Image (cartoon, rainbow, N blue to C red; front, top):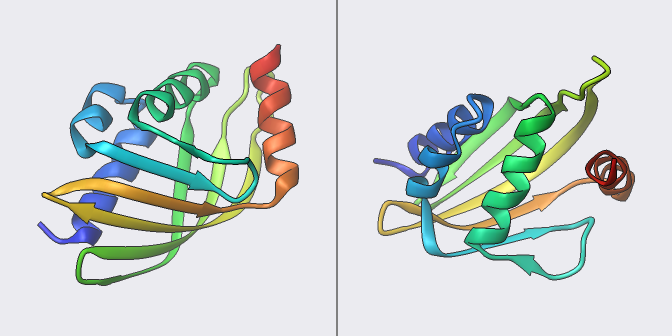
Length: 125
């Protein structure tokens, strides 16, 4: 399976709020870096974050551009996070996904820092 195929499986699992499927897609040594927060997240922290965001109403990545190169692929996405009051948080994201042993090993996501503030406020409620 190509890096793009694995990434597309990832986006489908996120859209379906399928955390169990994500657990299988993620390498045990997963490291996720997001431009709007300090440090990186491991597999457990990433799954917990996705559980919390999925509980709000779900996440959808509309892929606007995608290309692969070996064990890496790159996406430019329009992301929508549904929230309980019916108004979605929407933003653009640039994402690099690296694959090792057929599983997602690294994710680097570039988003505006205002996105982190909006999501943080939602999760605090």
